[in-house]
Length: 561
Image (cartoon, rainbow, N blue to C red; front, side):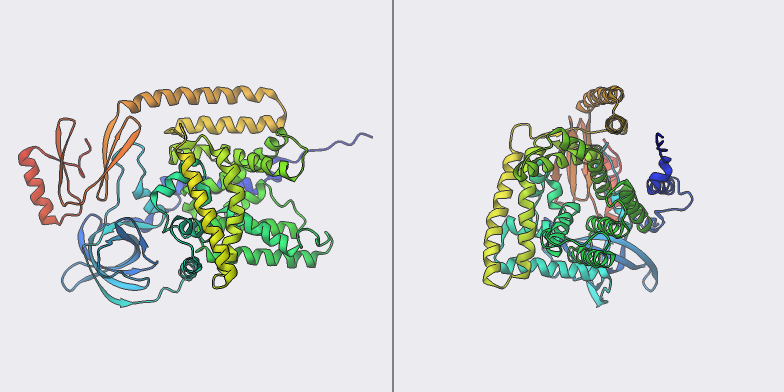
């Protein structure tokens, strides 16, 4: 008799996918409509834009920027009158100039005089720093004019301990002999310590299509995972039998423990925690004899992340991580089989890298174009060279941490210094190749076209029907038409925007920045006079407004040209 196979409903085959979609819809309603609850209640304040004295608690180690120190603080209170203090319990970001005589440490309690504001977008498609702060549960940002240390309260959180361990381990690289750009690169790709990375190196990696190498994420966690599995199984020579559940459970427990220990030494960054969570679910599924890596596994990890932190749904790192893994599951095997099925290890290795890179780029393309407005034309060449070297850099970096004060550690540091310097040189060379970066500013309608095209291509692979190429081609054609129309509109647009002490001038799709160190900045733009004067006291602000009204001068922080 002919056996009839009945395909299960999609909802039963992928239950966590539907749970994830329902969770995402609920979070979007709560974020935009405040229904059924307000996700941004902890960042709503009535004291913004007013100069006052605050009592704050430094909750994270200070981060050094180009011209200031960045302090993540918890607002404890605000001085309302001379003898009256209003209690607060919100978070904020404060900036302290680098020429200060002393720098606060984590745990210090300060009295600061500042004006806390929430940056607003004044140019179309400009990065919305105010919304970014609210996603981090921070009410706003302020620049400290006067401050004083009045006490110390140790921060006893797991993330604070992890950050302290992370910085102590980063110091071991300097003790071993690493310095300059290789030190910043190795610290970033092994520990997630990116404070030493300068803007030029970040831009070079972004333009070359290797920005994911700098951010410790699934790539680096996967490298550690492969090394741990190889060591625990003697490089595949000893593998527990499928029926030996106890040995499988012990092996998985060791792998999970190492993954979360690595997440701890990288400062418990959200990207590493997501990768460790996904690998944990994979190992639990392996113990239970379930399919390890699937859309259900990915959706389950995403649901747990959203249940713990709902605003992660709007985080760029979250979107890039899960879209990359989803795209690899969708397209990697098809691309790899299209490139060939036979060959030895030296042929299969580049094919795996090539197929994985192309698949991940396809999935992250909508997010990349929307948030970063650029994509590298040479990302395939960059990944073919950088990804194999990243394996050796991550493994060599971990060994250097263990053997930092030994002769072997010194030799490893010397090799890492040379390899890291070569990687930085290679990425800079890729950046300066002709037409290395394609700049596209995607609108929501353009993103919808991309998503439709990617979905139709996946359905073509699953259903084995060429007819699915027709809507995919139509969506890509519409994307091109919308891009041409948007480019023509952008060429005729000239806007000014401000953030902190920086003025941004956008024209023809490019943006120029002008730093303002003086208290008042007067300039002329399109036959109008403007003044930019951030962080003035109320008395000086009132005097400036009166001066500008008498001379027909516009205040840039109040009126957009």
